[in-house]
Image (cartoon, rainbow, N blue to C red):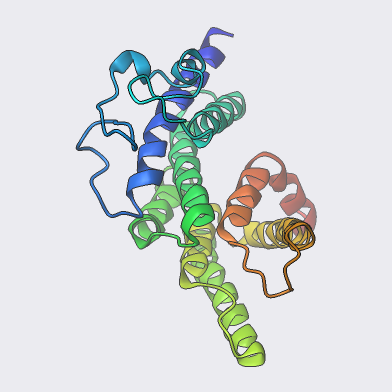
Length: 252
């Protein structure tokens, strides 16, 4: 229980930093300087007003100085990161594999919320992420290098082929290059066998959410829904439930 609480606190603290990345990366500003400050009055946030989850509750979701509302996004990201950290700890314990997956999931959380806000997936995360997570998969997670390399090539290649065919048929772009690089990063880290589960899960989830939003917002079928968050959700599902599906599919 103590270690699970520690994992929760660790996740919430890292989630607070991920909020900074989500807010500043699209603006191409430093994620280190200046320190945390209110986006409305620009007053520096004191350490006691920057405690993950707790400060939001104590301040009732408002800035201490100007009274402006603090977005619910901040505690949501902290809570999501904390919960996923606990689940990763329960699966792996505090092992090297835990920390590798923890970093990978943290990157996916940043990508998810940036894609939701701006419909972009920053190259600064995926381009270095592709070789780094490939190497982590091979040397730390111990995935056979051929499986990881095939995952990288197939992951990027599948979405690239889908994007080209869609553009050829519809005469408009349907999938951005960020999604292609993201799936290449995912495939390089989890191996090619993970991709079928991830593509099926993300496509099904994306279709359900997309159709629901189209109905609610009364949009036509061309309404754009970012695909990155569904790929990230599929990765989380695969880490916890997908290995059984893969073993059954490939009989190993």
